[in-house]
Length: 366
Image (cartoon, rainbow, N blue to C red):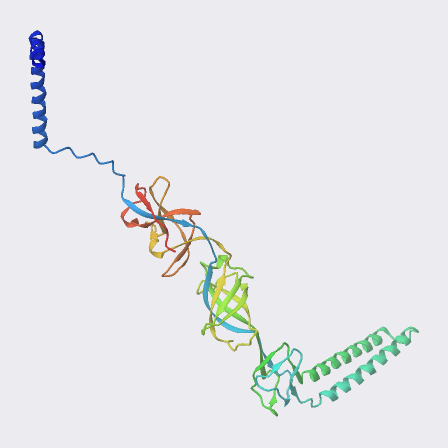
């Protein structure tokens, strides 16, 4: 029954059947062509995304830190005070201190024979008393015009000469007793008991090592920041340290070395015997802002200035000059940079200043 109906439909729509047959043949032909093409040609590769311009470099963020700079010098330790006491009169040594003896200020160190000096003092005192009595009598007579002006002045002159002679006799006697001008210890004693010494002969050397003086020379490139009052540390050869402060910086350089003399005073409360020895001097300068980095990251520009290569906000390479504060095999402290900078940590030798790069950030090593 269905076949009969289909045959009737085809008889009525014979023209449409031919069109459908042609359409089916066309679709079959197109499908065969695409299949053959797919077998003969490889599919097109997917288009790669556009590459980023410029080479890749590794960068790290450097943050500014507080840095305490130091100047390191080599100097010599000396006693803060040292004096060689000499004889001021000719006499015989009658008393001596012990070598190395500690003494206080004003304590008697050494005695010389008085000889005729005490007798001279007594005679000078009597002479002054006589001259003063003569002047007093002349003043009473002068009120009655019984003494001339010249005679009166002559008596006053004689009294003044007697007073000067008394002072000289008293001073000569005082010079037989040698006292300590400051607290310290006897460091040298070139005379013996009973020796006769002349005026000017050395008697002993007194030193004060409760504090020490360190002298050194600073190069002209480093003297600008130095001023008295800066804290200093002296490092002895055995590693011990003494603290103190800078007390003097010369205003003019030495003509031969072009360096400036300086002095520092150091506390030596333990009385270490280091006076005369050499020591390192570390001067602490005021704290400042600086950056810490590896010395391997420092480069030189065409003028020989030290600096670093960094990446700016536009991903372009920039040379930034720096001021070198301190450097060691492990690290360098530099100044003159912004508070925060993107430093090229790898690949800086393969890029040029102004070149656009692809910056790959990494965390700095601790």
